[in-house]
Image (cartoon, rainbow, N blue to C red):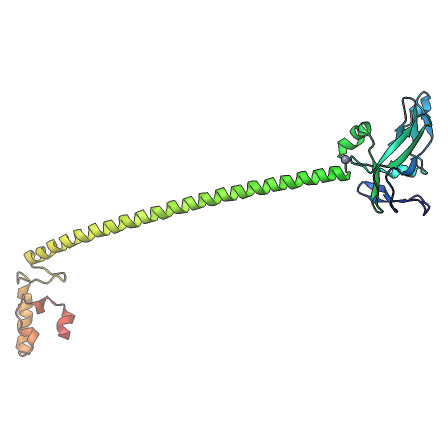
Length: 260
Ligand SMILES: [Zn+2]
């Protein structure tokens, strides 16, 4: 880094793009900051015209300052699209001075507009990193982010609505099914009631109960009679054995008879 005497209002320091020139003292608007300085190149001379570097400052159609020399502190000044300084060119004297175009506070980076030719050739392809362009990019990024968030929220709202709709549909279907089942059960209950009557009638008609025992004394009652008769002979006083076939007691199962 170049040595800069302490009475100068600037120093070389780290900037976004590498090195830059920073104010160390307040610089008044219009004040000369530093001269852009270097050997003069005459484009009419083949040797001069062949020189190629990033620090060439064209004064006019013939003369160009080669600012790549180490002593040229002004070469550290970076480009800005909204600068706080300008290059004040005096073609007659073949001199360039960097001048403040607004008050510059200590700590602020000093910059000037390199011009459209330089911008198109060197900065546009890689993207200008000056404050104004960074701000613009930041704003764009923030806007894009906000837009993404907005779209995401919209999608989420849409998905929620869809889910709610589906849930409502499912609920409706469930309720419908439940109602159908209830109705079916009602109908079945009614039908069962009828068929029970029929069954009961049938039982009454064929004399059979659920346990298969006869109520009217056809067929099997003889066995029952025999049984009860045999039991009668053993224990004549037992009430269940004294019952005649076809009575309610005979319709009971053997367990029930035993416990009776
Ligand atoms: Zn810019």
